[in-house]
Amino acid sequence: MKLLIALQVCDTRMGDIRIKKEEGPKKVQRFERQLAAVEKELEEEIKQVEAYTRERRQAERGTEDIENKQQKANIKLSNIKSNKEYQAALKEIDDLKRAQSLLEDKVIEIMEQIEAIETKCAASREMAERMKRQFELDREAIMKELEALDRDLEELEKERRRLSQAVDASLLTRYDYLRGHKGGIAVSPVVKGVCQTCHLGIPPQEFNELIRGDKLMTCPNCTRIIYWGEDQRYQIGVSEQDK
Ligand SMILES: [Zn+2]
Image (cartoon, rainbow, N blue to C red; front, side):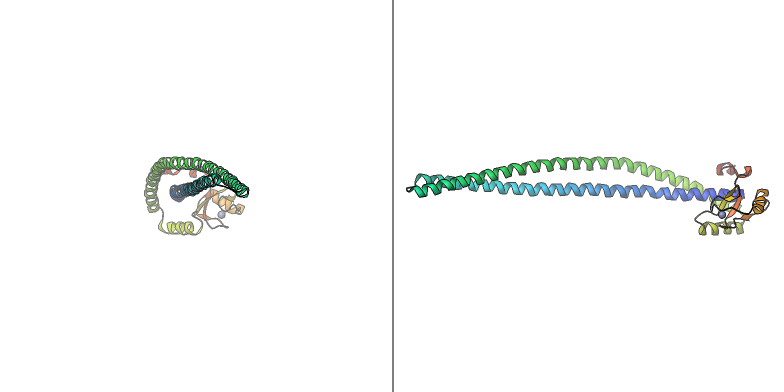
């Protein structure tokens, strides 16, 4: 029974380590997704800056156009003969001034936008850099942890081989079958008449038999191999049993 309990502890630990081993790569994937999101945002921001810069150039060209037109209008004004023509030329100059002022406002507005986005760009860039630096540190830690887990797993595998050789062959087959069909747990303690794995009670008479401990018993509900969980003989850890 002790051997079976040790085997169960060993298998449970190996299962835990295998689950833990998957955490590292998952963490890396999660990080890569986060970094990709930040880099995509940065790319969008750079595109926005480019679009605004094009818009600014266009507006500036518009201003130059208006300046040329103003020069022409002023020349025209000095050659005017009738009052009617004079009024029309004045109105044209006035309209050009208004248009120019609007364009100048627009240029200022665009420059403000560019400035705001460039601030965002700088923040995104810094964030991406910081994430990459942190990731390098994390990756080292993850690799070290994986190595440690591999070492533990190797030790446990050795121990498992030793234990399986010590256990009666038909019992080992039964144990492995139960483990394969019962969520990885083949051996379960029973405490105060209750199976600690399926959490159902076993009949008092069977519990008394279990306490006597002179034969191998199974839980009438979940069919796992059971032992009396409060038995002092079974309170020792795996490492103790190695000796
Ligand atoms: Zn049970």
